[in-house]
Length: 292
Image (cartoon, rainbow, N blue to C red; front, top):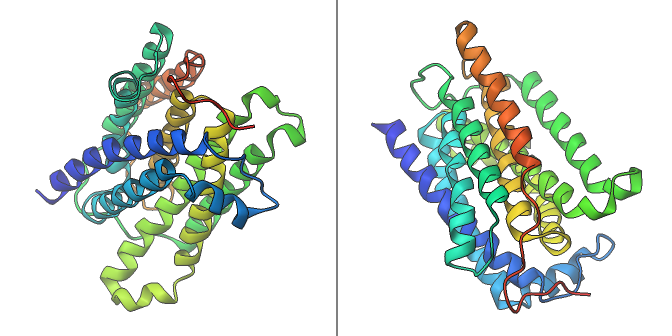
């Protein structure tokens, strides 16, 4: 029953997180561009928008639901539940925020959700929260994700196409949210074994905070440089894949058994890759224009 509650919390987190992203998108595009050389000035500008501030407050509630879900269920299971939020993006975009979502984009979002769900559902049944981890695996995994996130943030400076920088920043933010999620998952196990006071001296607390801060700026600038639906979808997808991988690599969540399971997981990855190519930029909502 504990895992089931964790899944329900994760589903609630998916909806609330999407809502936060759309409000942050509206707010971020009403202020000046985020500048990496002026982080405090950029943060002040972002929070000067009531829409962005509201989005961040909602994001805090989403974070609370996510932490609660990670405490009660294995990380890969939580990420699969969050995958359902990818389809919610299109519904919320059209019904709540006035975006026009094209047929190709709908197909892309559905394929993404199906791919992530298949990836998670092919994992063997698990019991307990799976919070134990190896320091070596944790350090290697987190460092690798930080490196990939950094390359995506650099984007155009290292030869990436400037027109796709918003998508790249969204992917970087999602990966870094995955870094934070893995660290938080580790902290739930540390707190359970040694008490809450142990979190104050754990290096994973610092990792979670640093990853969240960098992801905050990458996400905000990505929402300014790109369109809402693709950027939000890529951010969520990258976070989901990083979370599922973290559950397997760091916390020992079991892999699929047998040829059929491995084949389905490979197909799931293909679906996610194909889906990312099927999401053209949507028409902006009325009254929302990028800041100059």
